[in-house]
Length: 106
Image (cartoon, rainbow, N blue to C red; front, top):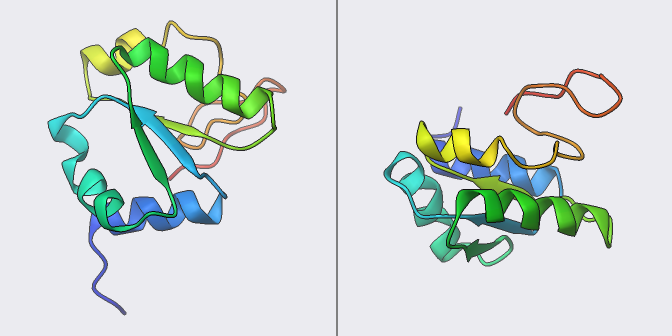
């Protein structure tokens, strides 16, 4: 078994899902993910001003060219604010998609 850190595991899972863009606001809950993104240029991190904006941007990218995208938000207020956004087209972490099918968990 290899020694893979949590941030590396998240990025590898995003790559498997073919996510090339991640939107969000820098937060202490996922700094280990951002550290990996700094060195790995295959997934681009786009910093936004508001968590809900990150969710809208990820949703828009998934709608227009049909590319999967993700948003990273902090626990607590960040997750609450972004939850007011439109339902994600294909959530990667829990929940249900628009057809009611269970989403895979990261």
